[in-house]
Image (cartoon, rainbow, N blue to C red):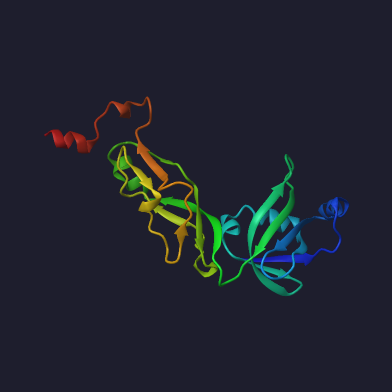
Length: 202
């Protein structure tokens, strides 16, 4: 994904305020062996890019005056109540060094799982993203979580995931839960037997 930026020579709160009035957002590129670079970005383009999931979890091609660098979005600040992006931070990426980044989880096949199809249950997503580490070339846009085997009363954990080659999960605790399957509390489904349970009694 390509991002167009412009060099920013004037700093300070007053200069940043004037930039925002002119429709630009101040930012910075840091990391690597080069010195940090102050930049500005078109506000509307950045605002809409931030709505895209991929913008937060993929390597970006940052074009500053015709020179393109590989970067990751590391942080951004928005106004408390206005639709205004105040600042954005980008980190340079070294193709030979592993990066540490959060990627979103995409849950699939819940509707065909035994918990939902046979047990009239619901599957709750405990996590929506995971911290991973990998080389930039191995960075996935997202991690797919297959729920087709989920049964009532069971949970899915990080260890159950099939990770792409070269990708490792950075875990704050051992084998955290990703999703759980249960019946809705207080619903008629709580008192009803699942078709599988009824069949076992025959």
